[in-house]
Image 1 (tube, rainbow, N blue to C red):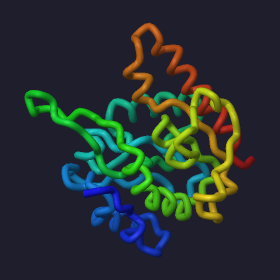
Image 2: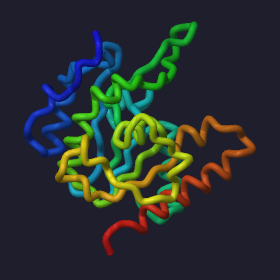
Image 3: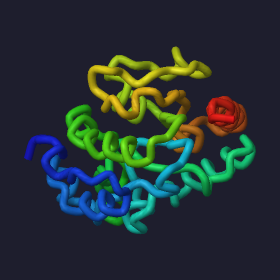
Image 4: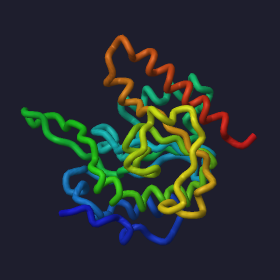
Amino acid sequence: MPAAGAAEFVPETREVAALAAAVQACRGCSLYQNASRAVFGSGPTRAEMMLVGEQPGDREDLAGEPFVGPAGRLLDRALHEAGLPRAPVYLTNAVKHFKFVRSESGQRRIHKTPSRLEVVACRPWLFAELEAVKPSVVVLLGATAAKSLLGNEFRITAHRGEVLQLPSDTVPETVREAKVTVTVHPSAVLRGPAEAREESFRSLVADLRFAGGLRPA
């Protein structure tokens, strides 16, 4: 089934709880066929800061909550060191279903990066979350999240430490005033060479601290 798009499955309401319930019936792309469930965002419904990752992983797919696996634990550490408690932050992903391939033994589900079609298909849910939460700061974690909102040619390495804006040609008008920053996904820190992980982690903390400073006084 091609990625037809989620727009027809997104209700008009901008209540987070109602959106979270509705996403379970989404058939906007084929990822729902193998995932256990859709994983919607979590956090205050009027959070000043929204963090957007790529997609739920194996742990998130089973738990139904974003960022509860190893990458989530590392993100918790980074937020703490950046002076940003997780509780006031809204966490979500650009893609709501877990995309994976089976290991040769069939015992493990291995993360697979969503295609551009799948990312675009799922984008109406992310737009709805932005409209519901109305964050003043949006932090895009990793290339998939960044490309979801800023375009397929966007490169994180060229724009870390910058304040960006959401594009007016694709993003709903009501959320275009949000300040946007980009950084690596916590899983990239975990997958990186062991000798570089501490430096990568410190860079993630610095990016989060920078984003935190953009919140209204």
